[in-house]
Image (tube, rainbow, N blue to C red; front, side, top):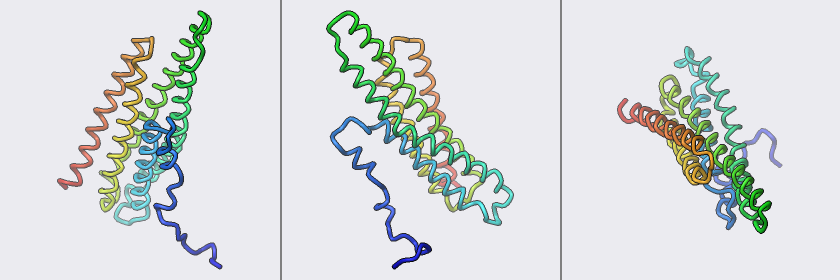
Length: 215
């Protein structure tokens, strides 16, 4: 009989849970938007790993207070992105439900159009939040690349690429749903905002990669 103090014999692969199986199933959700948010979760986790490999090291004692702050912020972002995994699936289900509404009478058509509009707006807002939170993670990773444990710089770069993937995945869902929005001014503003996020993410990830490849 094993004691509670003994390490778990479960491998990392065994502890993944059923998320990948849910994605692989023949259902529309969870899909790419939820996977994008999950990439953000993994990015934040790697960032926290770098923080934990920095705190307590004498060499990095001067930056320990700031690294601890970054760790706390990444923990909060982790929770936000975890929630967005479910939010994205729910928003897509709402779009599907709206399109399934009856459209036989004028009243039904009007109500269906209204609900499609609301669901489409939410289907844009949710991945937009995913992109924003992933960019928040990436900004913290960029700072960690300068002050954190340099032995974990490869992990920080992997985290940066995951954050970029989260943003790209979010953008794909935004782009599809923007076309259905009746408010073209709002659609244009959202398009401009996500383009700015993509540009900043690319720059931050490239700068962090340069620190690794060209120290």
